[in-house]
Length: 370
Ligand SMILES: [Zn+2]
Ligand SMILES: [Zn+2]
Ligand SMILES: [Zn+2]
Image 1: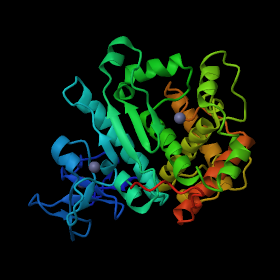
Image 2: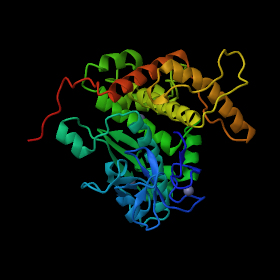
Image 3: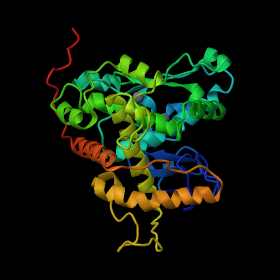
Image 4: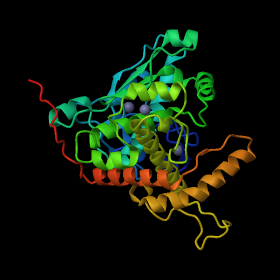
């Protein structure tokens, strides 16, 4: 995402900021106007950079738990912000380290929502989806797993089912997450990556399942009607699936649903990273063999896939090089083959259409509750 500046002093801050490190004013992000506002001297009035009063209040999850920096309209009956209102279950906060882990999870979730909002994608809560017949709504369970923490064998599986995304809090523990990453042989594992993957399953259910769109999906990703359980045991059992150039990750080879979710996550990685590069106006003046300097001279949230991928290649290589200069693992340890780009293109087109309200109707309408 682009960097946001403090509306009081102008300093660039990270998206998670709550108090400006330069001027010490309290800041809040207003998703409706896509900018930060600051709490004026009287500590009750939110103002924009011009000093104009804004009719907003902090999200209830900030008041109660200090885990959110987003703002909500003062008028209306919704005390939770656009990201927090999708939570169904928050963790038991009495557990050790739970509050700080939950805060990390919410911070990653806000980054996810920032991208979804910029893509103008439908994001109904459970109640909204029920009211307008667009089930499933998007909901989250964030759960603490005491037994998993003690034994190292997780009891609560991170995953998606009919709009509900469950995230085990163990993923917010750096040591545990790194242990799981290495034991699974993954090059990349982050909370934000989990969110982008799981929400990919949600959008499969929201935009493809039960619609005419499913045929185009199957042509690229395969037939999702094969047994998920068999595919899973094969993936973790004899490992005959293998990881070819056609899949963005080993996990994507398991089942067409996972391939879609993994590729969906990569599209969001690329769009958000390019929006950041664009936000700083970065360009590369010493990239050989190209007529034009690599730069993001387009809106990455509404760009064609060719533009996204052709600029991402050089920047990903340069960013990997910077990380290697610091002795860090590659920022983007992946290679995009033509087949993967074709899948990215399908998802990008699907999301662009959905962003304009062009969503395939359900052929079998959801049963209406009596
Ligand atoms: Zn400031
Ligand atoms: Zn919130
Ligand atoms: Zn998945």
